[in-house]
Amino acid sequence: MVMINSQISIGLVSDTASDTMSLFGLGSRNQKTFRPKKSAPSGTKGAQLQRHIDATLGSGNLREAVRLPPGEDMNEWLAVNTVDFFNQVNILYGTLTEFCTPSNCPTMSAGPKYEYRWADGVTIKKPIEVSAPKYVEYLMDWIEVQLDDESIFPQRLGAAFPPNFRDVVRTIFKRLFRVYAHIYHTHFQKIVSLKEEAHLNTCFKHFVLFTWEFHLIDRGELAPLYDLVESILQL
Image 1: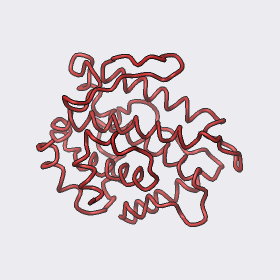
Image 2: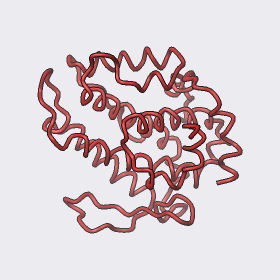
Image 3: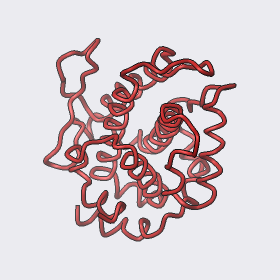
């Protein structure tokens, strides 16, 4: 953790979002996205909120960008941001697929103290140990199923969100955090060598500020990167 924090602290001093906006132009390597980018539901409130996100990120203030816009529906805001953060993690991990392999990463870990096992409660009910790339594959597949399920993420304007919607969102964010934790603990030196650390740091800062604003991840789940999270939030 000392090495990680010492190298990324410079990128976390301000709230600038300029690096987030350039994330999608990282170079040829980053065109190898892990899977196709998801879009906010077209013709719905989600598309309008996505434009709001893009505009506020462009203003350079991440803390302002995560706040619920006045008069907007909380669930709509959570939904469109869930898609946005899924895309960010998807692109970031896509830059590492040739390095994050079953032989290099036989378990989904975040340092020596934390190991994550996969279960989705449906096809895999008992948590199983899998390699990091297999865990991320299972995770991204599972998230896509949730995003494409209109009974959870409604596509039609005015359609009701289910009673368990926020529980689903919390689970998605909790599991996306694990991908960040794995990247920082296992692949940060590779990220530095690819000159992508500024993009990683800004995306993670945006992620942390959003999850903290809406209480989406329990403090205990943040333990693998808690020093970093604390520096972002300035607790």
